[in-house]
Length: 189
Image 1 (tube, rainbow, N blue to C red):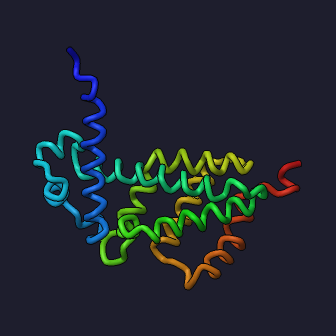
Image 2 (image 1 turned 180 degrees about the vertical axis):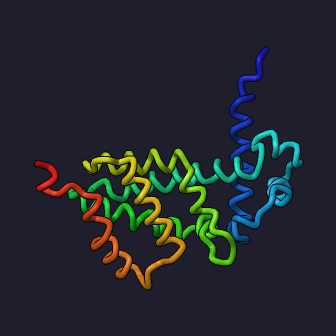
């Protein structure tokens, strides 16, 4: 008789470990949280932790990808009623920035007291790349690969060095990002 729950058990265990890591990221800058702390918080041995995540980078990647899907899901839901591509882009970026900042665990990835590992993770994440490219393509943006990479860098910059307030960030995005990332009547011809 086969264990039909065995695959699901692994998923549950990995999620439990990521949840424990998230609790630690709320209390400590993500760059300072070690595998021993995560194993202890998850209530498992280091051997068990390493069975699911071969190293801290793999755990960080899994956590970032899980949260990226959550942020993009929330973003998609919140902008679904906006028809204008420029407004969808502007609101999408602002919602994503706000979502990261409002999450104590995610905001620790951009802490100024330690190396801001969130930027490093965002730069090399295939999930962030794919979802950003897909978002831009849905707005009619051309050359989505290079523009998505640039947009991620702009967002990292704003997460590490935020504007004075929401209005200033909105104005910066309207002035510098929207003209480069939206389809204009002239380009559409």
